[in-house]
Length: 222
Image 1 (cartoon, rainbow, N blue to C red):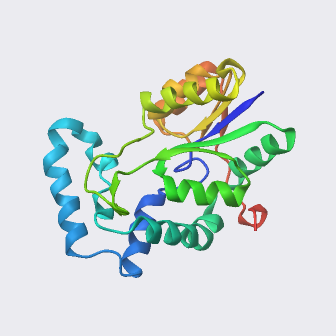
Image 2 (image 1 turned 90 degrees about the vertical axis):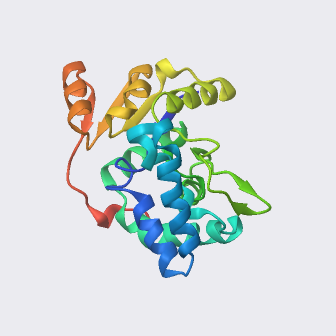
């Protein structure tokens, strides 16, 4: 069984899903004083713990929101605002893996409801994404239960490979950032997509595949 692992932000999509989703939530009346204060409180409370990565961990703008409502909005958000902006060269690779019968997984720090909606629309079965803490059907202003970032992303890939009987040494992985290097170095076929400078330097030095061509929206999935 061959595994193909895809990041989302910066890889399947140029830019970030989360900033767009925050604006989408605001337009749909899902952001107010409670969410803003929770977000600011998180920054102050957890800065000593997470340092420069605190903003990545901060999902407190979901505080108090109904999980079912957020999941519903995530589905409509992906259809309206993410599908038209997908980075076609990476989507083509994903579709090629699916046609070959490879096991494709979206492994990303993106919120799980967004990643799951995107996976469903792309025909991808496996998702490993950020799982936020909740209680009684509402999100909490707490650090995520699962946050695929850095070494955690590699750990999740190792676990998934073991679950499905795949070997990472024969897997492909697609990422855009230096934070993806642990995972990319662990697979047999690493691919740097629109890479940042540290990843670009590593990819060139190791003769990895690099995708950096322009986007062609007309070939994106409908």
